[in-house]
Length: 341
Image 1 (cartoon, rainbow, N blue to C red):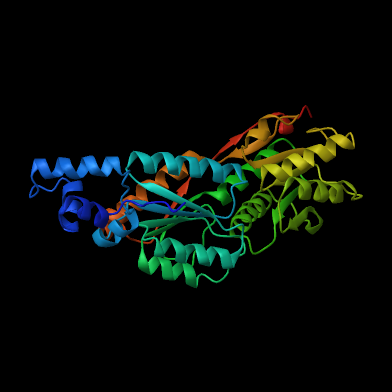
Image 2: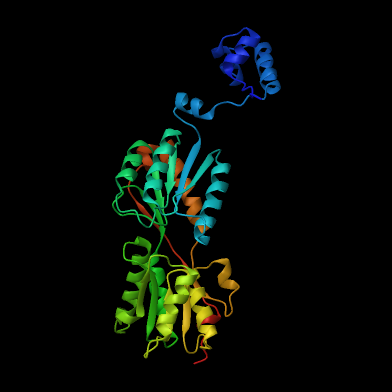
């Protein structure tokens, strides 16, 4: 059965009025009488009329819609950020369209173009870890206000909201050194990951600051820094003749995988090998021993994303500038580093 869609044209025909009169009545225009306005609004309710927000947005050059592009929703940090974006956008009268690129650069480009076609007022974006060509991002930035968060690129001249990843990693490794660890391994992503490399810089700076030699066999990289890869890399580390006495993982997932392998081989945590993760995910409090980890303030990131984007939408001359906002983190110390040595 064909569905009847209520339109301005249809209502105009029923009431024998012009479509412009119908439109102005629905928007409470002062030129339209109360009697006519009531007739129109009553009919609109009866027909379950829903305005085409995209068409209206194109006419008014504003849709009150924000587009969000993320690599995936599996990350605890990303989920936390997106929830806060939804909450803050709703408070400020904005709808949100969320898209996942699944780290596919072609899909990421397609999403940018689709959001622009929908007439969104602005875009919040966390880049795919595979994004090297930033031309599609620059194109979108020339069309609409665009803010990068979490996974960013220094090549894009826009507002970027991130945690201080290098400082956070430095503090985590410094904590391991302070509890007497000197052979500290790192589980990280492959070199093209901006986020991973920033944390790796913090790791290297901590070793250099405390005059601890950098040992290549303790630096392990993978394309997918997941729980399973954490297990695989930890197996590699404990098979070494000269094992590390600590593991710093740039994600909680890989750190939890490390703990599971250490427990399987009855390696004492943290006395023999201490473990630190990054994210403060829910699972970090469930795994035994509880995981020491870097707490990333996802809610604060989401709140700032919406706040700055709407300012750039409403007052582009004042706020539309290139700037990086770094948010501080906290190291949450738990049993995986509370050594008795």
